[in-house]
Image (cartoon, rainbow, N blue to C red; front, side):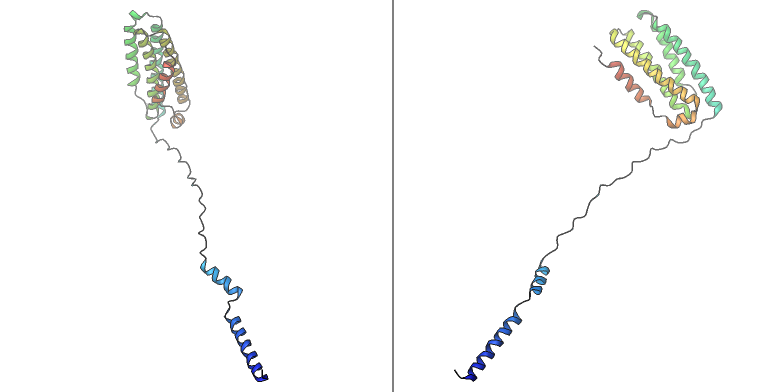
Length: 204
């Protein structure tokens, strides 16, 4: 082969190699292309549990509580409860057959307590006292209706428990009527429920 032909062939090989190298993508170009085709993973938000503050207890409405009315109310309440306690002692020593008139007196005394004029701050207390009186009446009615001794005994015990709780409420009110009213959480309904549960538990 002539030198001229060798020179031309070498030139053509060099051109082909250069073209091939220039057309092949570089490593960085390949990586860029791959990155562009990939969809980034969705970032999940971190959920934190809501910690809503507990609602504050609703304050009780402002009510009238004049000292003079409170003193009059407590004086009359004490007298009515004293009369009821005396009647209860009579009932405890009375036979079934003679208990009817005594029970009539107890019912009358309960109505007097319910009608007692009370300042607004003491109305809740009247409701509690009425329940305490009613539980004693209920216990003696059980005795009159000839329920079992166990049943009557449990109801009398439950009635005394209610009365003790109510007496504590009365004394708390006596010391500071407004504070007692604002902090009172005991209801007549809860007293009745407690009496029913205690008075009927395990009764044969």
